[in-house]
Image (tube, rainbow, N blue to C red; front, top):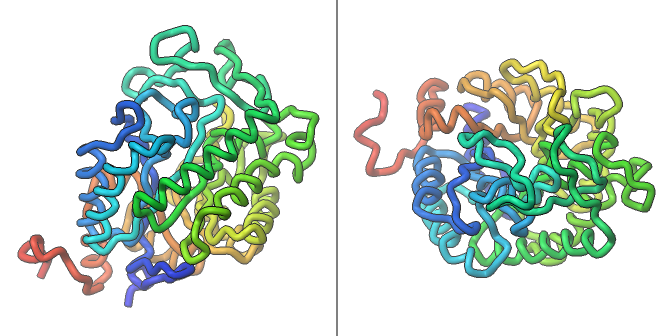
Length: 356
């Protein structure tokens, strides 16, 4: 059997293969609601044979949205359509995951195809943003409000409440988004956290909010279901977060009950120098897996079946998460199985199209 198509069991959940749909923002919601775009977009990737499908960054509060068009899970009314989507995905044999997110100072932005710029809080569709420190993401833009203790408690409560809704919506995996310069990453990176209280300064203080969010989520998330955390393993910037920090964080997250580290990089400062190339982030997943002794997911320009299989076969990571390649080809897993000589089950409706 091709290693890429070997099953993996995490807690009481078994993925039929090691291919996961990485969270990809669609910027297609109104007031946080999922709609038929999400049903078709996500459902087609399940039909295509992925083992795990993780929704786009799903805001735990209105102020936590990246844009006014983000998917949300901050109110009970969001559950119904999400449940319809998870039911369909599970019917196809794919496990559903949800990425719970708060954008922090990177909230209140235009959709990418509208320019992607910060929407000032006094403009239509804009709102005040929050962060560990009153430092804007980009120079010359409106600064966020530094979170006080009450604000920090609200963030934790919002993640906890969103987790209950995720369970009611039928999701089998929760991923806490602590990467790409969003709120939890802003707290652990020294580039964006200049606080002097118990949430700033030392490594232990800067990771405190993430650990507390994990603890809050675990209070309501079943022990039988997997919990992932996505981190940025490096800021790619002098004086910023490093892979050594990430290994130390991963050890703490493992102790806190996290099952897998979804290992990405960057996103916290606008001018980081990132050496983008095929598989450029895999080494970070490998280091965390080896040194922290925890399952990892590899991401970043993974586009070819042989490349994805080699990552799993060599033990660099336990799953691969594909984004743009699955936008180009929703049925990548079916094609990958053919190219790797692996016989897998196709949807009955598509069997007549199987390669001979």
